[in-house]
Image (tube, rainbow, N blue to C red; front, side, top):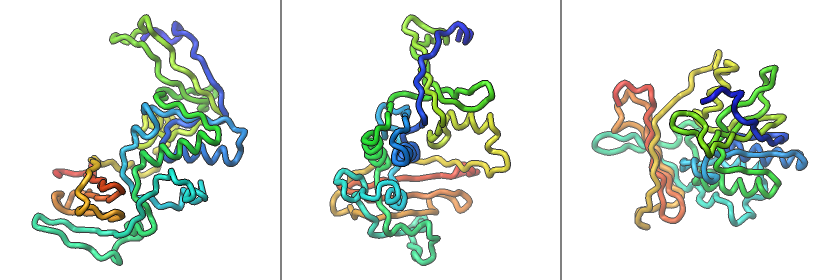
Length: 274
């Protein structure tokens, strides 16, 4: 692209807090900030076309966080926590069948009673309505592409991407400079492998003396099954086949409402031959 000095000045907006990413963390932070001080100006940027568009997880959620954030959530008929866990199975799979491991032998992390099976996309859409009711501004369809710094090197906000760039990287006739969103505080809650987070980790050496991140390949589908095969509230996890004993990973089946099942499989990326 042409030299930065030749580009038009960015338009800017100032807020008390700029949050990048309308996931559970970003939206919860926005809600809590407005609860603490309703006069704060808080904006949330979301790269997806709508809130929840990039949240793919079917999840089992411990309600402790939502109990603390929105204690009266159970009185709201629109909440997404419809399916409480009723049964929790952990299976070791082999080529010819499976063995169920007793729940008593499982670590506390794998005990899901009292938790809820949810679509995290629906959770985020619901949290967004709560945030907006408190006066949070949410801008879907705006991807933050650059961290902005002051002369001392401190983060002062983010900028959205420029529009109308030609294939050769030069500004075209419809070129529009991205907008700067400036905040006294900037929260980066992009989720896994966020592009701005990676820039900040490198710039401020945040990974020094830290364990390396753990990566995996995750596949997930939402199935609608026959009513006789559907058991609302059933959670199943497995390990073993088709993975070898030296390869980490496993599967999950979460039975949600409306005869739907979240079906997923994860392979840890440190495999030698999966």
